[in-house]
Image 1 (cartoon, protein in one colour):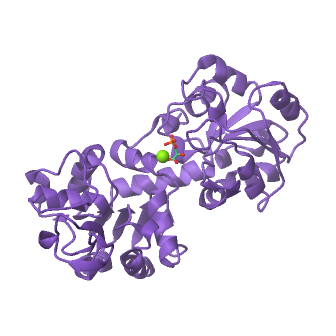
Image 2: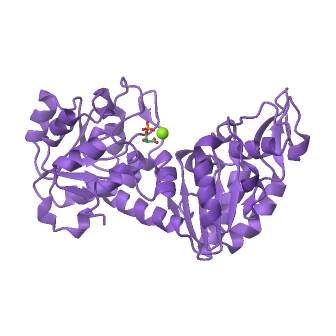
Image 3: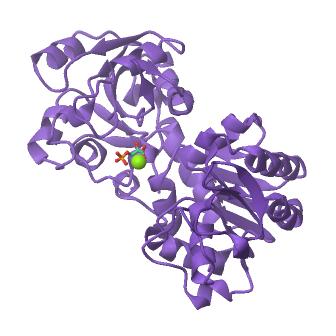
Length: 379
Ligand code: 3PG
Ligand code: MG
């Protein structure tokens, strides 16, 4: 059972130094945060703690390059509240700044991965972090698949609670592990070899499973079609998947030829020069009745290369999903790429059901039903 912050009395947090491990790992370009979705989703925990007079110390990682700074995140968070950036993690500056905090104040420390001991899950580092606070709140759902010091080490030392985002993500993705029938899963992305166990599980739990994105290219290759310059995986789906009556794949694709000209064609006439960049209209038509009748829809992975402007079919699917939500269907959508593609398509993301902040974490939670960073918050 997750012990969430609002199930305990406010005095656990009021006036206390509360370490909030958030996942504010957001895209940053030229020193500016370009997508604030994770900040919006994570702020409600911070706001609650501020309102009850806690001293909130936010930890996050940024990217994988230890040179990256979390300072732009502190700037972006100012739209929600007064956040003070401290360019240190467990040194003198961080210790002094956190010791001087008043109730209701918020600080964001430097990118926690600047210290290599974070990803090593070093016990001494976890102890240094824990010494900055009195209580720990785990709210970094999207990083909960990482057994790092700030995710699994600190909550073993301090009294630990789940934040609101972790609570919501776990509730919604648990629901996606036992979907109401009729159910539909739409799974895209790349690297079939890493997704094969999840595809198997979805085929057991969902009435229909549609593979799209680069995973569909793997399906075409497994069927013996040419995929040309399209992205494909090291491993391909086997017959047990291809012949499963629940399994669905695109019936047409958008492909760019050698000159970059895009055309819709059937998958079996893709040539060696072609690059598959999206699905086509017949695939949306195939999918539409499944979306319309579904009581539960899980969607992870865009249909095509949305970064190159191929968002037309994501938009059509989004509109169908929105209608399904209006009609009472439960919907869980995730993967940063999926949400970015929906936004790029011009569709409204507000009416699409639950949007997960998790990428890899969401897929791993779907598969395993727990994560290292969630386990430590269970009691
Ligand atoms: C993510 O963006 O998927 C999470 O923040 C985890 O980041 P990582 O894959 O670098 O551990
Ligand atoms: Mg990642």
